[in-house]
Image 1 (tube, helix red, strand yellow):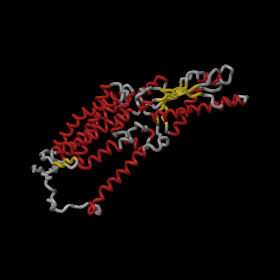
Image 2: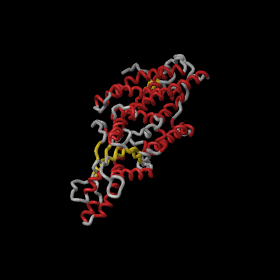
Image 3: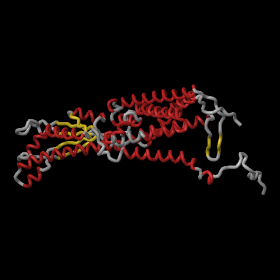
Length: 431
């Protein structure tokens, strides 16, 4: 049988002798840059991610918890305050010496408002009849154990709510033991002394409930992560796609390699094109994220128009930041933007581990890192009725600041490069 396919050429390569991997791999300079960069990235990522979660209890710094004293009973004989007042005073005094918990005294209505706005991680409540029920324990009139109530706030995140609950329960049990020590001293029967050693019952209930399909308060974090990844990955893909289409980068898919004719265009105009396309593509990605998470998976989400608008603006802000960094730093721009929007942002987001339970470095990053601002805004929309005082107001402000910074920084750098005549490539005609 004959074939019309010509045999492969056996002569020399048209561009001269080809290098061999075995020869190149022995060149130390070829190893230097990727080895150093990979090692530094691995080291920094390990320190950043693990450093923020290893010791949340040891790193506690002013975790806000509401402290409510509703006790209306008369003070015990010889004392000036009700037992509720004495307990709350002791809790605040102990907390002020450690500086790990920010006990916020307030009435029940204010505490409920703080739970509903996400400004406290939980609440400890001393009920109205507390003094009366404790006093009755030493008499025949006792019908039930005295009770203190712990209220949780799952909307601030399962770990933060759990830590606040444990701290509140510990404070309540310590108060119970202190009261029991006084009561048991006057008891005569051994059984009575045993029962009075820890007389207060501590109950736990949800102070501000969230939906069943809210991932125990984690959907805000993962939804925010989707928005950041959409802006980050979309921005980098747009950079690559535009550069390829304009002839400033090669296109290689499998064994096929192409190079388009270089389009003469300034850096500033290129950045403007990429930013306009980022704003346009984000319309689609934001809509698809909401369709997937809410319509298909059934995530609990109220205030859908607000959520869509916030999601779109958040994705655009991240995408514009990526374009500005890539325009300023060139080839290493993707690495720089990865640290800005992912590596530094994730451990300082405060969405899984509260910022109050992380080292000071992460609390500092949380002031300006984008993921913390966005997660607080998403959390407000999903769990706290889209209230501005639940973090949504600050999130909108920080999105606006991020967009302005991206525009000013990006266009300032490209304008500087253009004025200096630092063109990207000399236009090459198509062969």
